[in-house]
Image 1 (cartoon, rainbow, N blue to C red):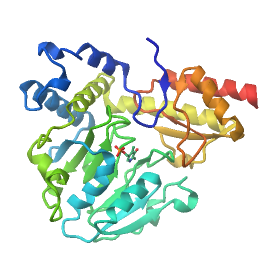
Image 2: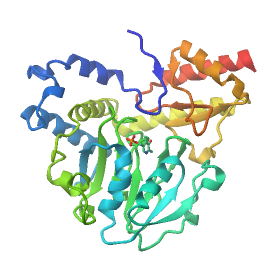
Image 3: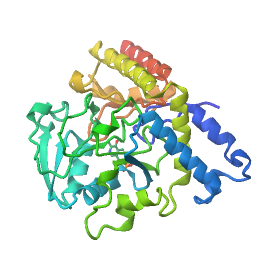
Image 4: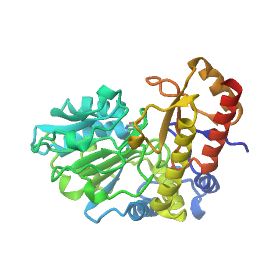
Length: 360
Ligand SMILES: *Cc1c(COP(=O)(O)O)cnc(C)c1O
């Protein structure tokens, strides 16, 4: 068996522990005589898998009692609409912070439902910064404040939780959830597509404060109401059972490694050394303000873009793949989520230094 170091932004690498355990249980889950994929979601077996996954994410993230954890489909992109549908609660406006491509998509979708106030934007710096909190113009009557703690494409990350008073704070944590501890009680809603840091694609996790559930706008389809899923324990219809099970294995793996505090230490170390390697060279560069650089997605460019293709080809030969930057940004992007081992980052840094030596 030969595995590559996969720097994909998503779907991304999964921990080897998780895939080995899933492989061992693939055709006969714990003596049930069937695969998790073949189980009724109403079966005792699957309900035990589902409940354990929920208990484990609650434990890892220290999710307070008054929050519900919903296991949905539709990706983070569906949440761009579900958030306004469920959280407007009679109000006509919501605040959005625009820090990049994913913020913009969330904004465009919300504009179908309400007046969107762009309370702050870093577009004038080409999204290489986070607008300082002191410069945000929040609307006290907003239904909620939405932001993107980690912009997966631009590689910009908030390293603090913005203070927004009593207005519920909503976060698209798709590419940073589980990378470090987070104080869930500071949020109204946290949502994330699974395929970056939780598990395989097909599952979307929504963590929502209970008092925000149940006042969706009139005409909201059942499948788009948080209340539907909260009432039915995410089993109103068939949930993405196998992705839910795989996410549960990822939560187990995180627990075994020492939880989010341990993940934070490793992730910070991984990011710090890759940024140091980029900053200490004139051959590579990263455009993002050092105060808001992402720990998960690290874009970098080569001083001579004519070498991009050669860089990617040689990296691939060395067992490192999916380093090509997003089409809107160009250059390279190394996504180094929880499942990317520290040695993987070390290998990338060594390769980059060697490539520079041969081509500078
Ligand atoms: C990947 C990503 C999305 C889109 O997720 P889907 O699950 O494909 O809808 C949205 N927001 C952020 C921050 C992302 O990284």
